[in-house]
Length: 232
Ligand SMILES: Nc1ncnc2c1ncn2[C@@H]1O[C@H](COP(=O)(O)OP(=O)(O)O)[C@@H](O)[C@H]1O
Ligand SMILES: [Mg+2]
Image (cartoon, rainbow, N blue to C red):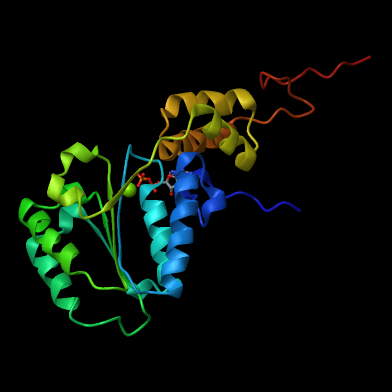
């Protein structure tokens, strides 16, 4: 029997095969690189994933972190840029003195929406990135275009742009997993404007509404009206 797909709202891609569009291809290449680095941690990794919201930036950063640390979540520190103050970056810098960590070879810092970090924090991040030894990864995401970040900041990273999956790609993805009618999938995909998270939310609403609707039964017609039993 086919397993029931998760509710769209709680769906979290667990691997590359569960991603759609160009982000899936970026993830594949990055994960290959992460695997190589894990087997030979003679360098560090600094990646900035940027692009529109809801296309998989955080998901991919988390998959890369998991690959590098063999799933040891204690080796991954995840933060939102808004919470990254200069003090936080100072603590990260202090921790660079210790090679590796108690749990594995790689330590990863993952900052979502790095552009929201304070100016002071961003300035300090520059030296943090310069001092990062082998076996450390700094993975960042941003919903903004690269031009919103200073040139100095950009040049510290391998900056990778994620593009929104096409309408057709999103529609096919929704249909393949949740077996919804083609016209519904197409409508949701167009409405999402390439934001997969938004498409999943709309799909959840559609499925909830379909669940709540009265089911046609033998004694009901398609409009839910009770049929009068014919007496002969
Ligand atoms: N390319 C994608 N393929 C499949 N699901 C996706 C994709 N992008 C986003 N999602 C869905 O949207 C959710 C949020 O994605 P996220 O990685 O946080 O996007 P971003 O960081 O770009 O805003 C994911 O948990 C997943 O359910
Ligand atoms: Mg994100």
